[in-house]
Length: 303
Image (cartoon, one colour):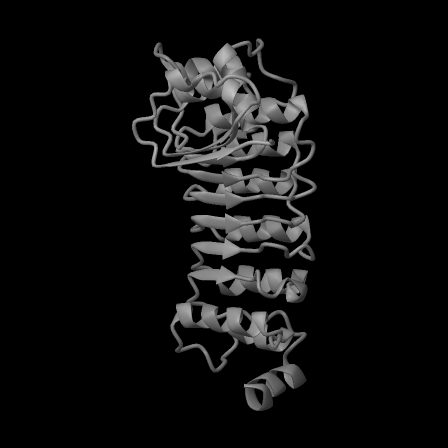
């Protein structure tokens, strides 16, 4: 590979990004094996820019660039957009050299994506807006530790103000850990917005989700929509309830404190996994538990 294919490509074609298709030694190798090779070379730090170019073959259906984030430049992102049209899963965890504009192009040109990893990238409101508008098949999304993902950006993921339509209709898993500011009221309202606007959501990972559940349970949600064109929480709640009691499809709950156990149980009766923080006083809320499907329970305490 190094002495023949990579050498020839490096000498003659490496900076010619106009090529849509480059014949390499791996065009007849199964896509899953190509992905294994990227992982093995990346983890052993033997993957080069030229080798990565040759491994971006058109028949890839899953691509993880997590093992080699330092190699993933804007040019690599553009090559993925052009060459890998069949991708259903793309993981760009830690690829922070990719600009937001290139991330938007990737999202817009890969409509078959069902899993997308954007953790620790330059993802921002424009990127999440593109995800919401273009990725109709998306089931799993990771935007953890993205410094530019704001509460407003999360709202764009679930609703398109220009089209006045809900987005990501089949999204089931949204990982949003480490977004700042975790304790901000705007973030709590944004998470409540997601819980109402994404009806199939089963996992929403963020430290402020219990606060969002309390907000929804109290139903003190305010009036009309905001200046950016988003519907209010009250409007979303009216659409979601349809005359019945509000229940969510969440299957996993994290960092639930004992005093709000009853609230979590009432809103999320289908929970299968829960992590509970125990208080210092007498246990409260356990008698209200009705999680018939609970399969995993983690108990934590500070003492």
